[in-house]
Amino acid sequence: MRVTLTPIHRRDKGISGTIAVLQDVTEQERLEQSRREFVANVSHELRTPLTTIKSYAEALDDGAMVEQELGQRFVGVIRNETERMIRLVTDLLHLSRLDSKQSPLRRQAMNVPEMLEEVADRFSFQLRKKSIRATVRVEDGIETIWLDRDQIDQVLDNLVSNAIKYTLDGGRIEIAACRPDLTSIAISVKDTGIGIPKKDLSRIFDRFYRVDKARSRNMGGTGLGLSIAREIVKAHGGSIALDSELNEGTTVTVTLPALQSGGEPS
Ligand code: ADP
Image (cartoon, rainbow, N blue to C red; front, side):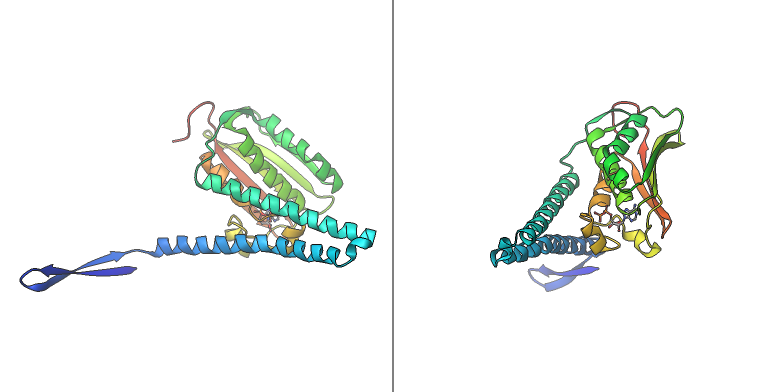
């Protein structure tokens, strides 16, 4: 609570009273705190790969370049770190566009079974590499849904890519669509992966929040995938929820309004 006191002056009587303004600054402070945290996180996330790139470039300069095998390995590290930085900056730009509502939705009628089969196809190489079996299941009667294809594809890609990243070789993934009620369609991505500890669940959609930073980084994660997914789903008038059991698996469910054509949900 911020209190501002302003004295009331009267020409002949001096101070005749005081106006007290009580302002609730809790929300303002909370926003300011999360802004500061975000900037600190971005700086840290960019600094880490830059420090690695610098030290490997120096090592090459100091002679590692002459040993062909070592030189190639160091160049590989520099390339990986650069690619991760590009992904990070791309994700940040995307989030900033979503925050400032600069990416208006371009909704179109999408065939749900086709859309889900296509996302599984896009990941067929990674799925095969880890011997993960992916299935697609769509409840009878679900045909089309009115949404921004590119944006929802990005949501599905983030969820399926996480399911693959955090599932051990030989696991299973199910991508499903059902109708929880007459006005919505729920799309879920369920895996038999490592799961998330209960204590982390409440922060899992926060920007840069990761259960295991080192593991996520090693797998090329930016820690922004779920936050981007949540913003896109919110823009569609929907919601996203995550349910997980440690060492058993995770299910992420996106619930979208079952609009048939045109308009935005009220
Ligand atoms: P990242 O780029 O680190 O994967 P995300 O925002 O996509 O970032 O996810 C945030 C964190 O949530 C991940 O670092 C991971 O700890 C956890 N997570 C997300 N999806 C899953 C999943 N399917 N199984 C287990 N953990 C997950």
